[in-house]
Amino acid sequence: MTDTEKKTKAVRDAGQIAIQLLQVDRTPVGFYCETTDSGSPVMESDDRFMETWQEITSIVSEYGDIETETLEDDGEKPGKSVQSHRTVEEEEFAIVDVVYVADGGLTITLEFQAGEGWGTYISEHAKDLTVLDVGRRIAGIELAVLANELESPAETLDYWMTTEQYSSQSIWADVRQASRQTVSDRVRSARKKLEVDTAAD
Image (cartoon, rainbow, N blue to C red; front, side, top):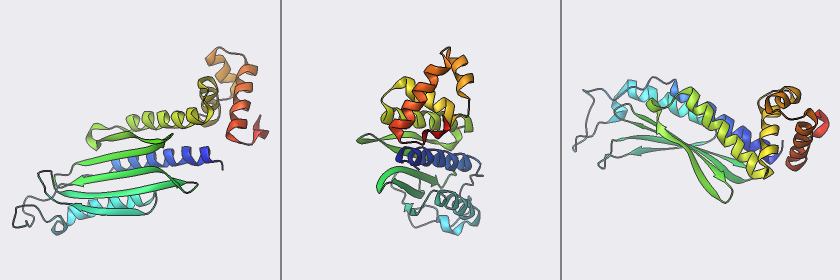
């Protein structure tokens, strides 16, 4: 598997984590839960909240090793956070960061290395995200990864549509209103640049 394939897999896996998190029944801390002297809820004393938290950490741990933290009430809502990182060829490439607060709010953040810096591609409350939103953003990130490697918009699009989206080159050529040979040449060139086995041509 090439570095680019590892990166696109890391992107897709992060998308799957986000989609799974959208399905979690987000339970707020109960009204009668224990509180600290400052009035903050003791989240650990609410079994339902902690069961949801365990489900969230279990999902995020599918991405890789996790780090968790309890967020104190410092003017913001108290809560808990969990983070997982993915490396490609010993370089950190992706971060999944999830914050679950006492009122049941869940924030999902996906960050990826883009060239020399980092880009945040999703950082929103789960209530404001749909599976379709996540899918569109993940597709955009995949295209960005490929475009960064290929440096050719035409090759990026033709390669992605015919290999990642499972469309045949002939069908895509018709949609694209280009010759089958043009699409084939671009895909072959992209595979060569990405060091992907060209036997599939």
